[in-house]
Each structure stands twice: as C-alpha cells, then as structure tokens.
Image 1 (cartoon, rainbow, N blue to C red):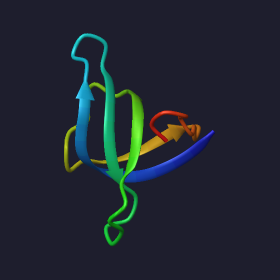
Image 2: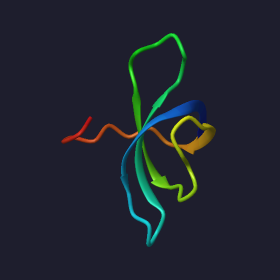
Image 3: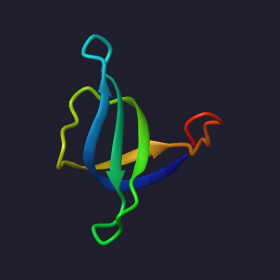
Image 4: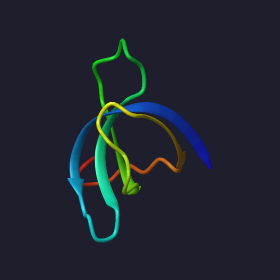
Amino acid sequence: MESITGTIEKIVYRNEENGYVIAKISLDKNEEKLTTIVGNMASVNIGETCELKGEWVNNPKYG
C-alpha cells in the first residue's frame, strides 16, 4: 500500500451520510497540478494536510 502526503485544495463532492469524499490535493506547494483522491474521509477540510494510504488507480473515464 502506497502513502502520499498532500494539502486538500478543493472538495469536489462530499456525502454527509457515509463520509465518501472526492477531493483535489496538492502534493507539493510549488506544483500547480492537483491530484484527485477518493475515499471515506468524512472530516477532511480545505487547507488540511493529510497523509493518505491506498493504491493508485487510473479511471478510464476520469483519469
């Protein structure tokens, strides 16, 4: 299982009932490219730095 650390820049979607979130994070403050993350993260907010563990998936529709 891989681990990345980044700062939440945008919440794209949040399901309050089950905590599922789609968000965009910056992995490096100097990089403009954002990485999309998905999962159960009910308490994350914009501006927070998070360490995330999981696996990389390239979605055929969304990348």
